[in-house]
Image (cartoon, rainbow, N blue to C red):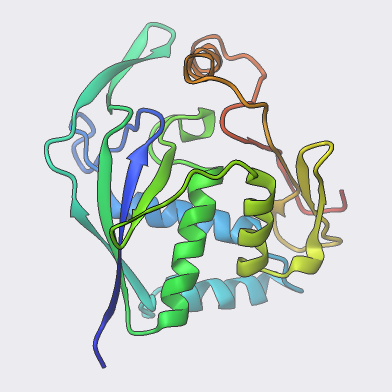
Length: 238
């Protein structure tokens, strides 16, 4: 059986600081991307027990002595440009520059698992990021091409997220409000940490977006409005 592939081009929305063994040299690492995908897959799941979560997670992402059904490899990231980012308290760091593109490939013998990984990657692109300060808004990326086809810009983010979460998990746990611009994942008595709610932030221009981001990084404000707002985690009722 021939191996199946999907080639995907990612574009950095915010500066990305990722490093390998040498903390002073920037390096895009597939392990960080896969860890982010695993994190967000786990965050939207709802199983009867933590043991069931672990079993399903191991089958999808691999575990000790068990290989994942899908591999991810870096295809192209030639001589990316960098920029110096101020991180607050007088500190700074060298990050990959906004607008840089990274090409990766998903490879698998299982077409269903390949499609599932793509959906998880899409969810991660909306909710998360990788590298330094990713929880503050840095390291965010978007998918711009899949197998050479341009990916259109989405405007109805709530509908997109509902569909992605439905594809990855069980739709019956989703409650959403277009008026309040949020999606609640209604779980009761879960035995592990899971995502409670996603609030979609207001639409802003690019300059305003970066102003808000820098204010949060440097001044440690309480705002969480970047691309999306993600609430804290819960293992109880909403």
